[in-house]
Image 1: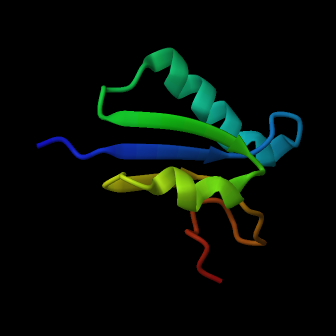
Image 2: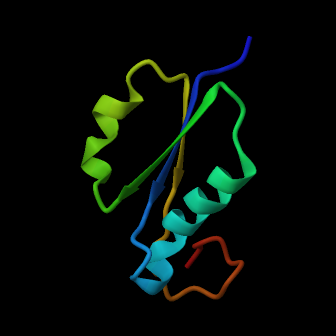
Length: 77
């Protein structure tokens, strides 16, 4: 049985690193997704998430935030 998946991409294309989710969404749109996966680019409107998640088995969130860690540290400070 295939899980009903939602990929939620957060970010705005004009805000440098914060545009990461937007660019991931565009790349996934070009590549195509299986029929059991939905893609949504929400910009900065992640407050819509609870309503959108209804009926989904899995949620994948693509977002970015700034830390003072070195790349590859995994956020462990």
